[in-house]
Length: 322
Ligand code: TXA
Ligand code: MG
Image (cartoon, rainbow, N blue to C red; front, side):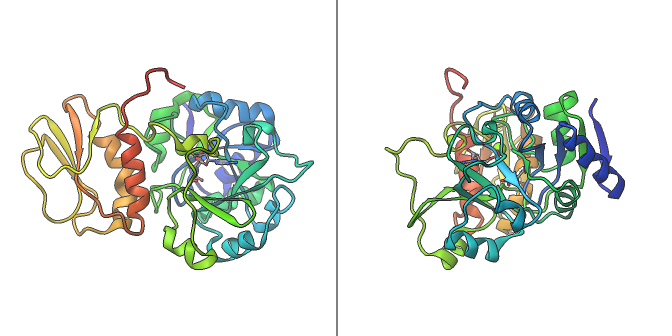
């Protein structure tokens, strides 16, 4: 078994030492648990891809302890400065031009001329990054395609022995991943992934966000296809439920008759629903149900990120796994 340690000053220092020597460590952020490796160490980064079963063409986010640590590796423009000032530390990732001569391993960016950066708000993540003093690439600490881990036990269940340490900082308060904004093209800001910072809040700072152009070469390979998925099929927008289904409910009025029911938020609160989403999907994914029915969830605020994850979890498995 991997070692799991409650996150405290000692275990965080140990985690920083393991990372510095080329290890891989899972740690809590305010969104989901990340699986970290130092951005300059090719072999450690390669291990992150291998452990997750992640396609090498899907780039990683570099996590930094302070804005100053991002400046040597990416080019900030005025929009990036404004967004960083407004939302960092916090659940916002910026895709920016990679600086020429940057020390970041090309495995992190999957060879792209851009790099995604974020400054997380979770105190354990911040202390770890600050102690280490180097940017850490960290995808979500799940097996590729599975629901993201919001508890240390989810990391162990998915990645077991394959990683060096799990820092247990309890449940992640936000529960959905960061919002990813692509600023790599001057004059155009693209929402690549809805997440913890609602679209409206970003638009209040830099104006309207563009949608991804479908004819464009894929800018964010991780945003396509089935993802976040339990092993049982999902049925969305469910207003009634069958006896052999599990029900992921939302709000005070819940149809009866499911084999088992969990409610994302009985009072209909989207922040509470986001915090419960991945843990409840994992919990309803049992052999005694045929499918998981999910009640409709409004798409306002954090609801956009929740519905994005649910839609992608409901896609049929790809014929050839990539
Ligand atoms: O909240 C989060 O962002 C979590 C925590 C651990 O920080 N991390 C996370 O990482 O969700 P991951 O690897 O599961 O998702 C990163 C997303 C992927 O969809 C990836 O394709 C995209 O960001 N991405 C990373 N670098 C990119 C780049 N240079 N250009 C476009 N998209 C990029
Ligand atoms: Mg992920």
